[in-house]
Image (cartoon, rainbow, N blue to C red; front, side, top):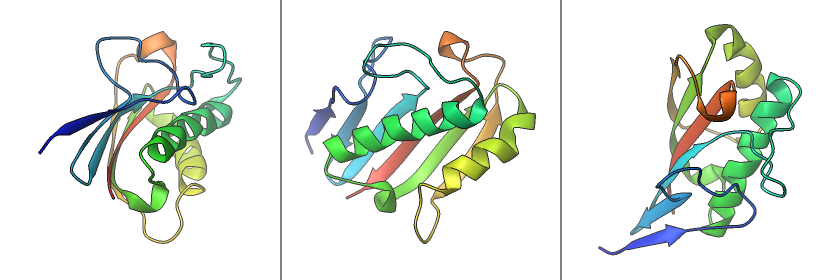
Length: 126
């Protein structure tokens, strides 16, 4: 199977040597997204709610670039700098899914790029 690189201006440019997503067959692997506004490259979120919404908007943009949506997401990984943020991130995250939720793990990390509080990666099947 051939891999296809997914790229969209509606999500932030990668800040390292990786792609926004890679599609192999009907599987889409989305790199972790943080709360960067793709229009200006800035972190504008004022709290964890805004930050999580921006992350989910970025993920949705990558899904759409691959002609997919949240219904096709089968696995996510959430990275948090503080597990005290878990309930707030869950509250926003849940609003983006209709019906069954994907499999998921949430892990605490010491730090994330750009000093953000949350990063989310996804796997989807089309």
